[in-house]
Image (cartoon, rainbow, N blue to C red; front, side, top):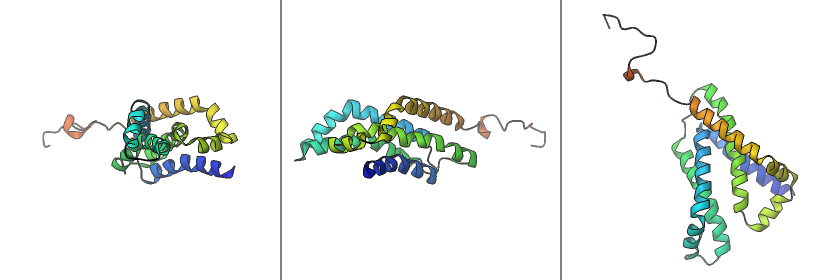
Length: 172
């Protein structure tokens, strides 16, 4: 039973640590994770069929293809967004959407695992608790991510009408 718990903890914690250490905007990664979920839903079957043309192990490739579709938008976004969170307050607040990425990522990935791994995970109390709280986790993560994006909007730039509060003098 310890192995599924370690797997759940690692799947939730690794994205959080990466997002915080690399100062990546977790709200945008959360939205990319949602995009990956849409890809799995609408393109997963066709992508799996395409991969099966080149593979002898169809069942294993379907699980791997679906996981790749889920995670690729997030991985790409993480690479592109390295260092985009600036300032101590924003870095501190980035923890909330980062935790959302980790938890929602686990919830979205679990149905894409092989049946053996899914049954091992499903046998844990932690997983039962996560399933009971999944609506709360997804809703709170969405709200927190959208609020973080709202907070992250850049201010007016100096070429759009000058700096706020500064008056032009005759000598300027």
